[in-house]
Amino acid sequence: MSNTLKCISPIDGSVYLERSVLSLDDARAVCAQAASAQAAWAARPLAERIALVRAAVAEVGKTTDRMAVELAHQMGRPVRYGGEFSGFNERASYMADIAEDALAPMIIEDSAKAIRKITREARGVVLVVAPWNYPYMTAINTVAPALIAGNTVVLKHATQTLQVGERLAEAFHAAGIPQDVFQNVFLDHNTTSALIAERHFGFVNFTGSVGGGKAMEIAAAGTFTPVATELGGKDPGYVRADADLDAAVDGLMDGAMFNAGQCCCGIERIYVHESLYDAFVEKAVAWVKALTLGNPLEADTTIGPMANVRFAQEVRAQIAEAVADGATALIDPFAADDGGAYLTPQILTNVSHEMRVMRDESFGPVVGIMPVKDDAEAIALMNDCQFGLTAAIFTKDVDAADAIGAQLETGTVFMNRCDYLDPALCWTGCKDTGSGAGLSVLGYQALTRPKSYHLKKA
Image (cartoon, rainbow, N blue to C red; front, side):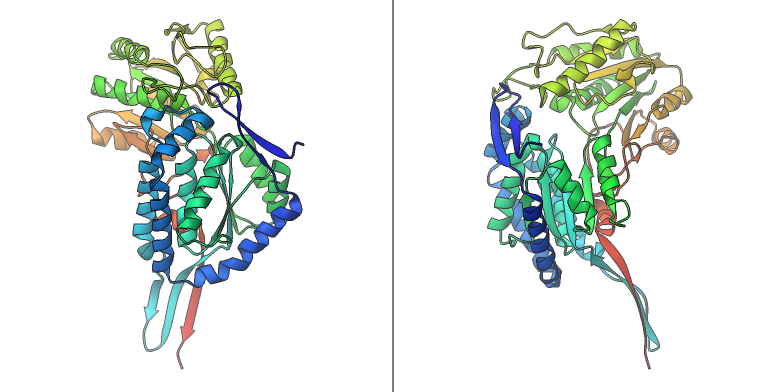
């Protein structure tokens, strides 16, 4: 196995960054430093930890122009979208805002006879394995509350976004968070698994592929180390007969195509009531044809290349297989489609759940659209999937959305929106999407352990 990690830029296929991985012994030393620093960090007043994390977030905010350009080079998102600081700040700030209440002791009794309470204690060293598609926002989901709760953090970022971990470490250390409390590392898979198996971590948070999640759980087997996973998705959208058609088209197509479709909660399949189906498809095609595929460093580009050629190859394969099986591709090739990372966004009709494009995760700019006759058919199709992260319902009837949502096998139910992570709500999933509880009050509960006190007075 190579001892270096290479970030290949999707812009032109060049090597943008290269970093050496740590040896197992050096990686063990990093974990030992984190473990040694944890007790003193947890002993600091909560208000001080909150203030330091807020200061670190502000440091990141000083470099948003650089962030956008660096992300374009690493994973292809157009600079016109300005990086990720807005969502990064929203999530970290919300978790800082609720920390005092979320981590407060639960007082069962405080009387002349006894004090009975449940407190929350830091788990120790938290390993965060972050993905490349929203590299700042996905990392901060766990990094901010983990530090605030008194844990130390070791961050391993994806090879495609090696620079993000370095930038976060620079900002957090500049804000005054000790280097041993927050460490960014470059590790290969074997070393990562070995560290987990050797019980160097009190908690592991992994966002990535189903295969990667399985590897994390296998490494942790028998260690009793909690492993939280957010894995694949095949998120559906449903347009009811009473939906605002234009709003549904705009919301769902943006959810399917933004970031070249490389969103954990991106829309990958759409079910439209038969009375609106033809009009929806017509408007969706016009929406996609208005996109500009091109170099993400250019201001006019609205959809950039996929982050890696191999990701685009998988999407092309799914599309080709579907067309061979009878699907209709509605978008002609864009001029910038180079057969590599630059991929024409695509809409498919005449699709079925026998096709991989409607069953397997695509994680790219392609969406299949099917007509349905009623809510029952839509629910059955939305649930006919191995994944369960989010589902979006477009309707004017809140009660109907609530009733449909109760029947969906998913982690989040949206009405009249999609592809958004609300930090006040628990980010979670079911089935092959994995298990875990990110952000919200439940995020703090996941990153801490309960400790009970029964203090009987004399």
